[in-house]
Image (cartoon, rainbow over all chains, first blue to last red):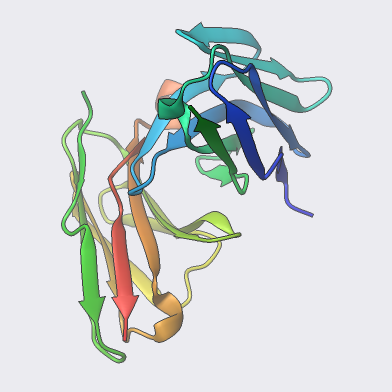
Length: 109
Length: 116
C-alpha cells in the first residue's frame, strides 16, 4: 500500500463544476503539498499545508491532521484547470517528499 | 522567482552510453532533488543532495549516480544507459527544511529521455 493515496485517479467534469480531489496518507507528517502538472511536464507548487485551510483564487486546500486526510477543491472550474494534481507529504524529520500517483483532471468546455 | 533550469527538454541516447542530465537553480537553495516520473508510478526520488558534495540515495538509485560540486548545480549521471531508464526526469530544489522549516520544492520543466 502506498503511503500517499489519491482519489480519484481520473476525473472529467464540465466547465463550472465544483471539483474535489482527495489525498490520504498513513505516516506522521510535518507538511502536505499540492502540486499541479500541466501537459509538457512542468510542476508548480500550489499549496503547502501543515494545518487548517488555505485559499488561492479559485483553489482551496484543507487538511485534517487527525484523520490524515487532505482535499483540494476547485470552484468554478475552467478548461485551463485541466492538469495532473499531485499530493505529496513530508514525513516528520525527513527532508524528502513522498508523492501520490496524481489525479488527472479534465475540464470540458 | 526561483528558477530551476534543466539542460534539455528532450534527449535521445543509445543503450550503453553515459548520459549526463544537468540542473541549475538560482536561489541559493541547499536541497536539490532528482526524480523520475513514469505512468502509473508517479514521482520517485532517485537521489537528493542537502549540501555541496553531499548526497543521499532516494528510493530508486540503482543505475544512477549524482554530482554536486557547486551549490547551484546538481547533475544526474546514467553510467550505462538502458532502455528501462527511458522516462521523464525532473529536478527540484528547496531551502533546507532542517534550517528553515517546511519549504516548497521548486521544479524544473523536466527532461524527457529516450534510450534506444
